Length: 165
Length: 122
Image (cartoon, rainbow over all chains, first blue to last red; front, side):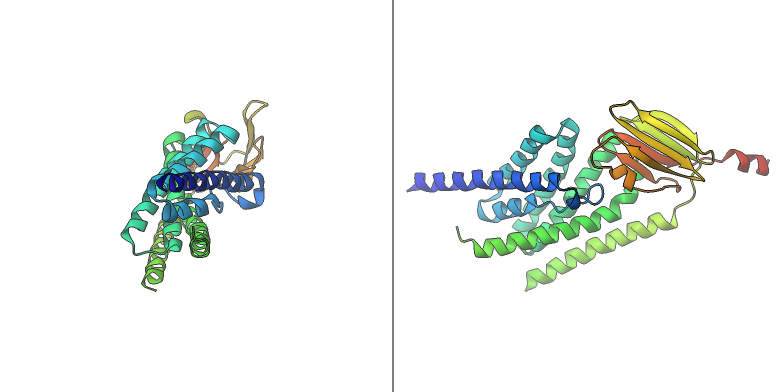
């Protein structure tokens, strides 16, 4: 029984990783999703939040990391990997903490995750490009990250209710 | 319902922070004097903002065409796929920048007294 459960979870995990990659790829393919640098919906965040609530923190972290690494290997380069990774790590860390705190709904957790993803990437750009000028872009990134995270978090919340196991 | 309210507070706080930073940036802005171009974090060149010019940064494979025109700078053409730097528009205030992540080119407006101001003041 325990073995069956483990296999089911593993299958769900694999499915979520591939879904996250497909969503990232769709976003990458369609320029409409990226109106300005750093602004995009982050559709894969739906999957990460879903995994965070349904599979637990360790597997959700693995979904997020695998998505970032596989996307970089398939379509990106070392620099793209550093940007995505810094965004994903900060975003996931904060979402995990907020989820644990238990005072926010998935929408709020998503909004915080979206903002932190952008902050992480901006910090990475500040270090890599050695320019402070990017700070002017922060307000735009804060708002767009919140909006994007709110949407993905809300969608994840709805999915969590509708999909039982 | 309490969670909903907390979500709202969180979002309002982020919005407030964004507004505060934007306001600060707006109040503290002033016209720059030079255009500093860096590639890979290394200085490529520094050009006066009041002298119209065009500059091709990079080689044929990966380039950004920088234009300095009537006191502001913008990128007219870029080799990259997303063209984000081209869409970033014109900049003239100190600290503002145009960034091309694929080519790792940063165009930043920096301060310093302009030559003519010095001449008039002296």
